Each structure stands twice: as C-alpha cells, then as structure tokens.
Amino acid sequence: MRRCVAVMVATGLAVAALAGCSDDATDKVKRAASTVQENVGEAGAVALGEALRGALAAKDLPEGQTERNVDVINQVVRDLPGNPDFTGIEDADGDGVDDDGNVQANLGDRAACLHIAENGDMNVDKGAC
Image (cartoon, rainbow, N blue to C red; front, side, top):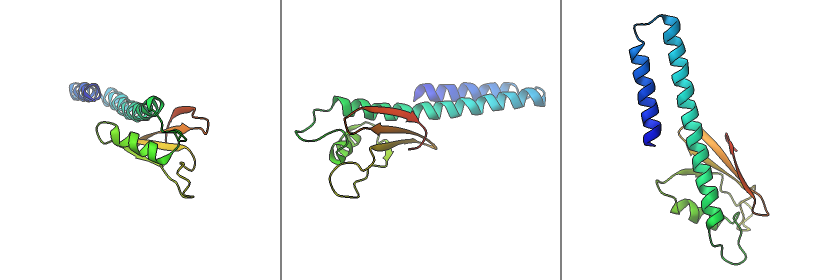
C-alpha cells in the first residue's frame, strides 16, 4: 500500500512540476498518471485475489470439505488482514458449496476474479467475475 501511495504521490508531483509546460506535455503526463493509477488499482485487486488463493491453498481443510465450501471460503476471508472486500460467495442451493466457484476481489473500482474449480485448482484473472 505504501508503494502505491508513493507512486501516486510521485505522479502527482510530476503533474505539478509540468503545470507550466505546454498543453500537449501536460496532457501526456495526465494520461500517464491515469494509466499508473489504473494499473496500481488493478494490481491491488489481483493481489487480493492471490492472497485468498494462497490462503485457501494453505488451509488445512476439514475432512469432506474443499476450497469451494462456503464455510471454508468465508473463514479464510475473515482471517485475511485488513478486512478486504470479496463478493460472489454464494450457495443458493444450500449444499454448502459455492455455486459457481467464482469469488471476486474488490479494491476501489477495480476487481479480480478467483476461479475455484471442483477439483481444487485455482487461478486469478484481472477483472470482475
């Protein structure tokens, strides 16, 4: 998080330093700053998804449960530091297993999707589930 703030501050300083430059140069710096902010937010969301994936993979599962069990997912989410925002943990049919195996990690307006297969394979993709 400190690194993200440092990048944003540095970008802000660059924009301020170039305030006296031509409109073209200022526009280029603003576009670059916007791109940096988007990339930092996207990387943060992916990092949250990877943190959940890693914690699920490391979890000593109770007998008969898998990484897709709603109780397991919810417990791991509660145990992660910083009260991260995850959505999509759903069990509409009441069988105790997440319906689609997709859990969305949210960071601001950015998201990443953790896919949990029935066999326990997991991967994280950029973007919403």
